[in-house]
Length: 146
Image 1 (cartoon, rainbow, N blue to C red):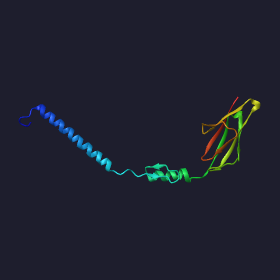
Image 2 (image 1 turned 90 degrees about the vertical axis):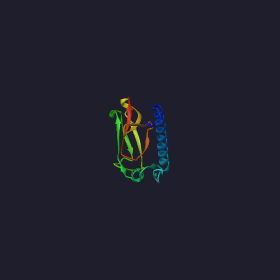
Image 3 (image 1 turned 180 degrees about the vertical axis):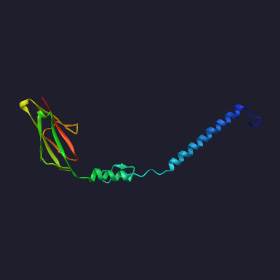
Image 4 (image 1 turned 135 degrees about the vertical axis):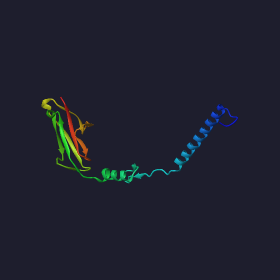
């Protein structure tokens, strides 16, 4: 201890110095953060979506905008006895962006009525017939109820 300074005063001085040092450290960190340039942003030239890396952007462009391939549509009726589905045109593969007309045909003699469509298990629409835009492989189900 310094001569002539009691323990209480020395404790107060140490606490004040700790606060001052903390403020200096905090201010220097804040200045460092302000001086850093913002991270680069890579923008998709097709849709304007922003990505943090060039690789993410390029993968997005390839998948979302350039992979215009051919896709398969599977159709089914639920329950099977409730009716069937007609595809127009009915072919094995459909080009990306092609519009397919789906018509749910009921089994009225068994008392079934069309209710709704689902796409891969998710509710889609109640329109019948339905025009569907092909953008990937899908399973479309016509749901019927007695």
